[in-house]
Image (cartoon, rainbow, N blue to C red; front, side, top):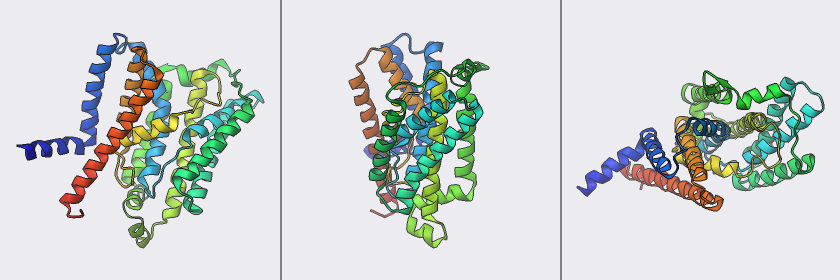
Length: 328
């Protein structure tokens, strides 16, 4: 009987999409009981808008972790902050909106490429490399802005972060959904996508197969930066201001989402669909706790517990798979 229960639990946890859908239902029930305002239309729309930025950086984080090698990007929040400040400075200098937005994304990609250069090409440990750039980018954002938010954006710019199309937030419909579809296609239907998983599972085998491990990881760190750049534009549009601290803590949330979505911290296993579902869970938990007037410190504690739980589940599944295949 115990063996059957363990097997059933393994099947449920092993299919991360079904598990996350069930978890979403549980979170909705719990948060609705904590606050009568949780299931209101305004709150749902608010969660979606915040979740859009988190989804973008979490997708980039997922790809970096998938490629293995201890891959992680602690600088995504700082990249978002710095590129947003530079976007605001360009707008105030009279640069056209489209040109400033494009430059912002390119700059964010360059910042991500710096991570790729130091980690994939120069061999720095990802934790140390991105921790260093996190501090550097964050400090530069503060210096450039002098700690003062950059505002004065044209009113029409607010449409991206605040507007609706068919009752769906513009940032979700025109940015997050297309980005997710594109990345899903890349990871599931292209040779490069297969390379990401193979590099994450066994980089030595990937090299024997003629795959450039260095270039694969370099591209993913660059892509992570680009996605953070998209997030900075959305955040600036939503707030109608650019702030040097707007990305603080976003890296922890992105890592939590990736782990909860089923991405193995060692790489090689995970899906972007799981990441998107995990974004919904994290944003719902954060919104529900805020509505219930739970202290911010406890909100961070809950986020930490979610991260620990996600990693524990991933590890348990990995150990079970290893035993079934006679690896351990």
